[in-house]
Length: 117
Image (tube, rainbow, N blue to C red; front, side, top):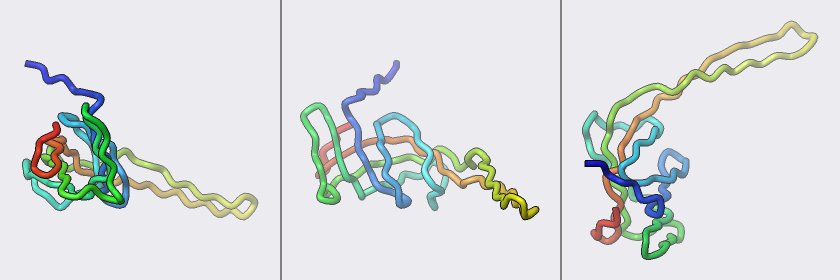
């Protein structure tokens, strides 16, 4: 049984100081969340919800809107190289960084207790 993902249903939420476009039944990598594997996390800072009936826009957040996520695993992102150099001064500094991430699966999008997706 395959689940079809409706591209017309999504939510824009704010977490970790960033905004994410989330669709149901898809996984995303967010900044590290303090949650255990398999645990359910709810995001309440929902900025926008789009479904087949229309668009609901918050000012800035939608009241009683919740996006439910399931924690799949904790991982680390790709390595970024930070290289700083001052020409003609023999000054060079090379540094690497790997961001701690949490991979989550979007379970549901709901508003006022009514399940949208």
